[in-house]
Length: 342
Image (tube, rainbow, N blue to C red):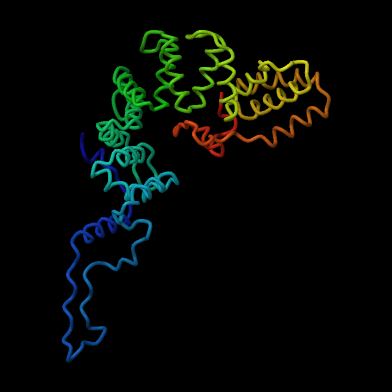
């Protein structure tokens, strides 16, 4: 590919100054010759120091010090959306072969902004470097690139190859995507049992969506033997993390509670309200219908009790010793958009 078409462009004088400082840091300029001791020169007549004054360089664009925290600083700048500083901090690590830095440099090119050109082909180049080291996120990114034809010609077989490698590395988004393919027979043979096995692996790794999916399969005996007690356990695990589908099922199924009791109705109203608040369009519609029907059997004081529980409810954080999935959006409730779940 033509380098002029794929090179990341970092705009502005700040990058030129940073590059100058990187060079001067590796080859320091010699100090100016001191004036004769007996006849010191007036201050104004001394020769200038070599190089531009560093005080004029914006601090956020000074070159990395190449210390042990540079990669962490680059990641932090990336997470904050400061792509220009992140690029400068990560570039030396990517050039030296750090797979995570290479993946993040690919993400920066994939997203563009902050003085960095949007360049999917350059992103793919960085992803390939990281994928050569079997870095799961890079493998998954390449699979998505081939599936969408982003930076490369669409190639479903290559997409499947890279997706399989990412799933084999226990990257949970890849496990979920592979399970979906086997569920629907897209690009692979329809195999509900294989789909269940992949969902189960992701659930065991702490993924909330996978926990909901295996609860659905266990409760219905879909792709596995029916086990409603085990399905209930997985529904509760997903619902405690705020999964709207699991919250809806908890209300719908009751889980052994006397459905004629006040406690069941208060709990169900609580769960349905949470599902209504957090779910996508389908869940919201079903939860609203069921909650309206339930409200007809309740007195106002019980509805008020349920709503107090809704206001007090918080997603359960992972307990010490629990397996947690670093890719699970339910790990950070503040970042999990209300209305985003299914």
